[in-house]
Length: 115
Length: 115
DNA sequence: TTTATATATACGGATATCCATATATTCGGA
DNA sequence: TCCGAATATATGGATATCCGTATATATAAA
Image 1 (cartoon, rainbow over the protein chains, first blue to last red):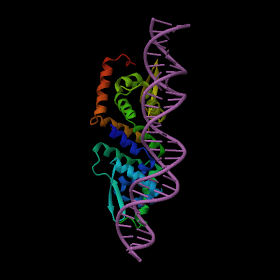
Image 2: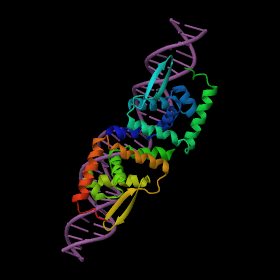
Image 3: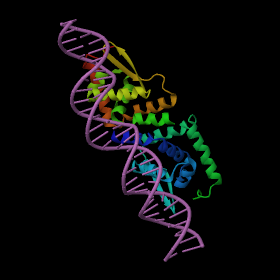
Image 4: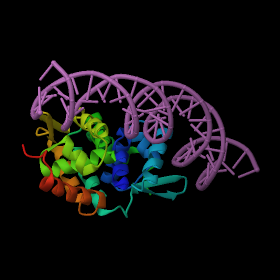
């Protein structure tokens, strides 16, 4: 039960929702790409990523000086089905829709994305 | 987007999750039955019901001295599909499972439930 | 009209959350 | 080895959240 309310607390912040939405959509993103897409300060993004990491929602992989984040592969099924639904929200939410578009832009023009 | 994070904030508290789970399951419950099932103080329950009411998640109907709460009938579809999933969580979560059982008990023995 | 029951809200304190700014840390390249 | 880029964390302040307790309100019953 604690786990469950903590899970929703992780979803209850706008920045974290936007991050999760991008991770669900793209599989794996590094911090600097999140920074470029979300247009938020680097410490703010890192702080929320740490929050998500500590809640077990995302996992990180270090490659050189970059750190790639993804939705945690061993998330319990119950939580996973909630996350999947977030994906469908981008159809109606303008901010999420904008993030999706910005992400495509980053993946076309940026230099920091090839693994 | 604010709406969405506020929605999850409403789900991020254990008491509110338990209340919502009962409302989803039973349609309509009055405060005193919630009190009997959850075994929590009346002001605590009322406070969280007020929170849910202000977030638009539940609506209230007054009948005599009782107030009956239900999931808001005009909840946006996106939020509704999230709520429905909460129902399925009672299969795995012991607290929610216990609440379901206690609710059945209340509906058999109590005096305050007939509308 | 007084009394009891159901429900809501006010108050004050403890704790959590969130942020901006500043500073560490780690790693690759010159 | 030194420098810059990518990322993480520390600090302190503002605000929100949550709770227990006390109190208010409304309705029913006596």
